[in-house]
Image 1: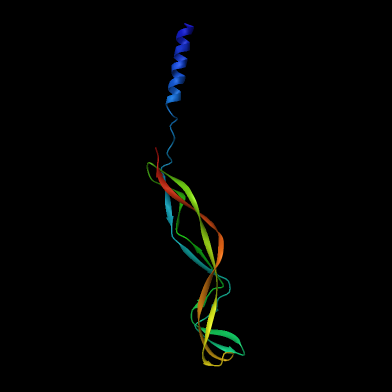
Image 2: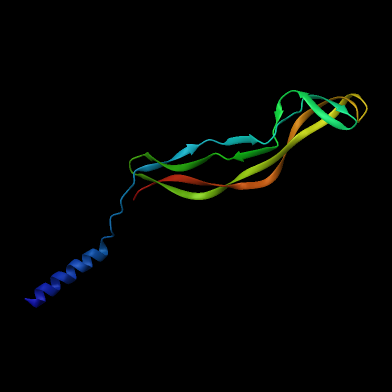
Length: 140
């Protein structure tokens, strides 16, 4: 009797080792998040202005931010349903930072006094953080 019981237990343990545990599939997918540009700080006017004794003052035109953050398009795990798949995080992407300011040119007058025109110019100032990027993979 002990021999039969021993053989039965050995067979169950052997089969348990051959059959991997069933993983559950969360049935979710990665969701697309579009790129985003966020301007902040005090804004200046850069299209048309005046210069008085070397000081420039914008009086018209579009707004030029002091700081611009650029978040790249990426995917996030938000729990959106998709049968037979799972959402997994893959990598991190850099959020870029730019410093902006007015670039002036004298139209009428001397370099220090007159009517000026300009444009908003932004230059790279490194990273301001990261966002995680995800993808969708099939469950096995």
